[in-house]
Length: 573
Image 1 (cartoon, helix red, strand yellow):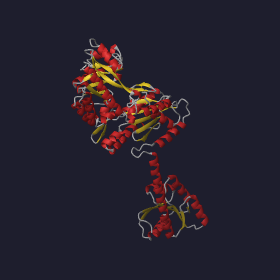
Image 2 (image 1 turned 90 degrees about the vertical axis):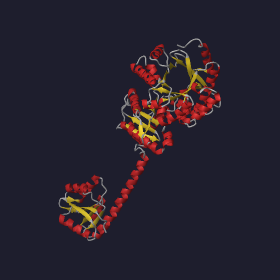
Image 3 (image 1 turned 60 degrees about the horizontal axis):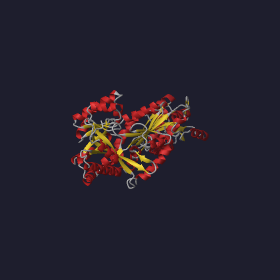
Image 4 (image 1 turned 120 degrees about the horizontal axis):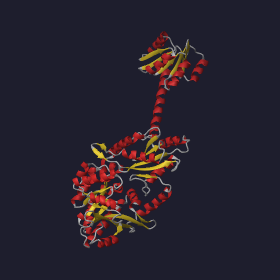
């Protein structure tokens, strides 16, 4: 018995013959609909209009042959049982028709056999469709990211390899951009994985804005993405595209009425100079982010040829970093902070150095990023804070009781619930008065999670510690956020100081920051002051204090004490 509600397409028969076939099938008490078509035009129309479940075809008739209709079905790409129901009973004809691709050949008058053939072929169709669906699902799971719908790494590599293989132009270049959003683990642990998933989806949606024929995007894993850009033609194009990626996260992500600020790190390498295979290009681009040499802007680094040597050095650094504190290899240098109105040293900034037994004295940008990745930054931060307070108390005991010390707090440290207790313990242990300690946090770190930052800062403020925003001006903090945070000072980002005497925009930005700080009753510090012109400009604009090579490079505690003694009756200005 035929299943109900079948749609039959009966072709190559007259209306009377089609009615007769319908009557034969109706005797089996089945509910079905059918349409009759004779020529190819009407067959094509019925094929898409009726969307038939089964096609019952005549074998041969005036102006009609089943092969033409079968070819039409094949061309459509549709999987529909095609059964010849013919008055010809010749076995040769039947075998020939099946060889052409029909699903069965039934002698006319055998309605029961026709029904059995229809049921059998419908089951076969269902099996084939289920198999195709399963294969499609397997393919999608294998090649496409389930959360974002973006191609996975394997699909990305296949497509990029294919694109590169078609390039005959020996001058052709392309770029790989390896992108990392580092705050995802924190967001997952604080707000839950569902929030983290939504953030990744929103980020991938923004990144997808640049995907096109010659620009592909993939989600590597977690919060790691990569672009292939085959439209770049020179170094400027490569850099401009990195800028465009950065701008995609210039506005916050809104999830359940919460604002999340995303900062990206991008590693870039160029085909073919930095590698000819996509896997090598991806590896090189990623390795630039673990290299200690900052080759371009704050959050974007470019591949260098000696990356193999740099990677080897990095492994050695990582292996020895865990024992740096234990082996007394870390040292503190201090850079004076000068009051621009009086010219006196008002404070110092504590800066960590690593006296490595093999590589010599290493600056912070040569090991702090590695410390962040390995988690050693927390121990280093604790060591720096304690040593800075010990030295500040020593200076206080020597009569420099107004000399404050500034210590940088990393993003990871700010997230630690023990930070407030640790700061309190160090102050009690060293005997340093809390108002002589200033903690500096970068603007981007504060804006990652304003609510959590505010809570941590309030706790520090309650114990009397002073708080400053470092690198102010390049992040995305709003006036509303600044008003909420219990801050004491803003430190203007170095790039503005560097350019202010030759770039009017930088000069105006500095004036605006100073005016903003004054309106919020905050002091303003400038970093990286190197020339008399910069000093004069900052003094004229009533910037409160400054530090930089114009006054003094970072020096060890002994030399700083000598400098303080020399300046008892003089100034640095």
